[in-house]
Image 1 (cartoon, one colour):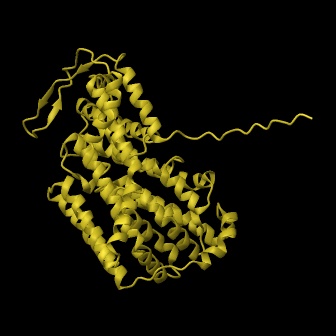
Image 2: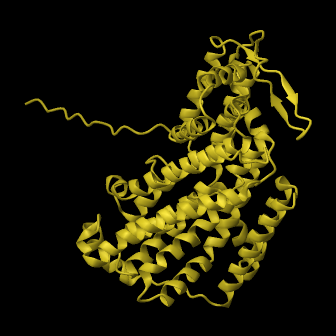
Length: 470
C-alpha cells in the first residue's frame, strides 16, 4: 500500500528589513538607467546662510548609471556617512542594558503602584507618562521588551490583563517615540540632514507628546475600567485565566538606597544630554561620552565587577547591531540616487504633483508618505536617510519649512511602530505576554487611529504657522 504524501505548507514569512532595503538598493540602481539625470541650482539665502533649491532652475545633466561595483560600494559608503549615528546607537544600547539589569526602574514602578492602591486605574496615565519619557529622549523601544514582563505583572496585580500592561509600557513608549522631543535617532537625524539646529522647535513636539500621551491614557483607562466592571470584557480573558497563578507567584524588586542612587544617576545623565543639545554642544562626541559616564556610574552604584559591567554593556550594544545595519544599508539608497543625479529628478516630478496645492495639503501628504514608508523601513534613522533627501527640497519648492518636513517625518515614522507585526517591539511584546497578534490588533487599532489624527493635525498646523526657524 503506497504511503500518502503529506504536503505541509510553509508559513510565509515577512521579508527581513535588510532584504527589503537591499531590494530597494538594486531597484534604485536599475532606475539610474531609466530615470533621467538632472539637478537644481542651489543658492545661499543671505538671511539664514542656508543653501536652498532654486525651484525654477531644474535642468538635465549627463547620465551616470550605477555599476555593479557602485551597488556594493554604496553600502560601506552608507556606513561611513552615518558612522556617528551608528556609534551613538551602540553606546545607548549598551548603557541601558546596564541600567535595566539593576532592577531600579522596576523597583520604582512597583513602589509607585503600591502607593496608589485603590486608585490604581487613575494612576495609569502617570505610568504611561513615565514610560513615554525615555523613548522621547533616546529613541529606543526595543530595549522596552525588558519591561514588558514588568508591565504585565503590574497590570495583573491591579486585577487587569496583560493588554493593559502592554499598553502602559509599549503604547506609552510609542507615544514618546512618536513625539521625539529630543530623540537623536529620528528628529535629530532629520534635522541634521536639512541643517536645522539640533532639537529646535522642541516646544512644538511637547504639544504632540501631550496629545499622544492623552490618547494612550484615554484608551487604556477606558479598557481597564471595562475589565474592572466585568473581567470577561477582557479581549484575552482565556489567556488571563491560565496566567493567574503565575502572576501571584512573582516577586518585585525593592526600591532601596542603591536603586534610588541608580535612578538619580540616570536622571542626571539624561538632563546632561538635554543641556548639551540645547547649549550647542558637540552632539556627535559629547552625548555618547555622557552615556558612557552614566554607564560607569550606574555600574559602580550597582556594585558590578568590571567584567560583569562590560558583559552587560556588550550584550546591550550587540542587540543594537540589527538597527545599525538598517541605518547603513538605508543610506546606501540615497548614495546610489545622488551619484546618478536621480534625487533632483524625483524631487522635480513629485513637486510638480504638489505644486498648486496648499502648504497644508502638501505637508499632510508628506506625513502619509512617511507613514506608509515605515511599513517597509522600520528604522527611524534609516527611514530619514532614505526620505529626507527627497522631501527636503520638495519642501523648499512648495513653500513648506524644513521644520515642517521634519515634523511630517517624525510623526509619520513614529506612530505605526506599534502596529507592524514585523516590528521587533510588537512581535516581541506579544510573544512575551502570550497574546496573538489579532487580539493585540483588536485593542491597539483605536490608539493608532487616534494618534494618526493627532499627528496629521500637528503637521497641518506646523505648515500653516510656518514652524521654524526655517
